[in-house]
Image 1 (cartoon, rainbow, N blue to C red):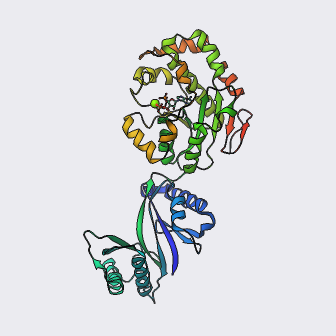
Image 2: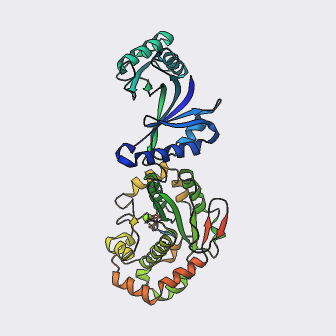
Image 3: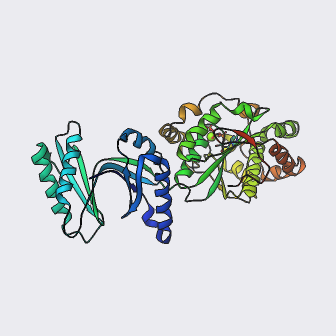
Length: 401
Ligand code: ATP
Ligand code: MG
């Protein structure tokens, strides 16, 4: 009887010919995160079977698996073999009894069986009855098929039966790194970490781009920006953060941009800079935390003015969300308390009464007159890259994997 954790993925069934690729990415993510805690990780009948190293701590495995995207649920238990000579049921009975005994005070239970192998000689119902009877006579628990305290699961695979208990729900979504590379404009408020996370959950490989108000990027290290980075890196290992000072922008803009359009023009600067970085470093899209109508810069007119003529798609997963539901997500991913910490914010430099309908033509004109491209390339001269451990400069255009 091998000790296992069985991990079920979500949504992959809809992926047709790509399904294998998604499955492999999912299994690879599970394998990489578990490291030496797993003796063996393999795909079997649309789930991932992990044989655990002896003495592994279940709470520790739970902590490692919880941030896996694409996971419907996981459950611990035992794997027993079956073959044409031996239906495996007597070992499966022992497994079910061991799991039932390990449960703290439950009085009722039921068995649920799923047969992935159609060659197995017994029907699901017969497996439920055998395992259920064994648990009743060994433990005195009662069967309640409608409202049990605990459900035990028997999953009949091609040559084995997994007997499991205690499903833990996953985050769902798509497997890590299965949906392209994206660059998130990252402010360190509540919205942009949530937006980045939502796109990670759809399988995107996300990096972050933050424009900061300091003279040097070293000063950002240790602020809430790098703390938020660390939380997000727990979901997407290999996460990177580009840090770009916006003083070059401020120096020119503060003299020439009418105060009522300063917010929108600053956002135009960030979006254009994001576009440039995306094109140079092969990101396929930008992500922002914009939400329609949340603040004056997020009216339809102002969103249009900021995004006009961009050559990369901009994904705004929160565009239709209200603040309460964004906050609920921020709490779920454990970034809310960090996101509301004070930060030397650029927004304090900006107009108190921004215009709600800045004209796209005005933005275009300012862009030409103030040579936005030059401001961006000067800003990028000072850009640095944070990977969670070191801060380094990068030669432009040479930060690819
Ligand atoms: P919150 O609204 O919770 O304060 P936010 O991240 O939404 O935080 P906003 O001022 O509403 O901040 O900005 C809207 C979007 O613009 C952000 O979600 C982010 O994508 C982008 N953004 C704003 N400021 C910056 C910045 N300094 N660097 C990079 N992107 C930024
Ligand atoms: Mg916002």
